[in-house]
Image (cartoon, rainbow, N blue to C red):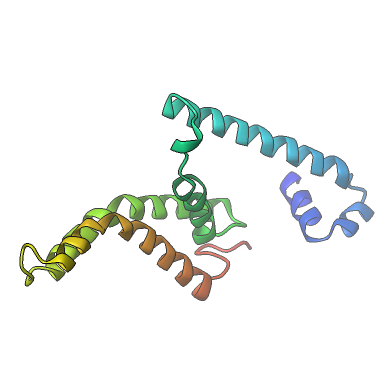
Length: 151
């Protein structure tokens, strides 16, 4: 019932209020719940890094990656978000080694001191960001509601 009420408020606040739901109270409840989750996540991140320094925060890793996980899985479905999280994290971990192998194969015919070959081999870490961007573009183009959309 609580989830259906939240969905009703999200879809049409006026209709939910006409059905007797206190929309303002629910907005406040969601704000408090979201703030508590963000507070716990911040405490966990600070504990993981042993300290919180602005220079050590990597937005591409902590913010962009989570958004990609939710968008790929499906934002209106909890199972889809979890699936997107597992899929994107697996790819995040595996793309760099696979990219190194791919670059070794592509540059096998070049000389050892070739500038292009050295640049490509040094740029393997960027394969992660390239792959995440490519996946995001493909999902938004061919499955805009995610792999498992909301019912």
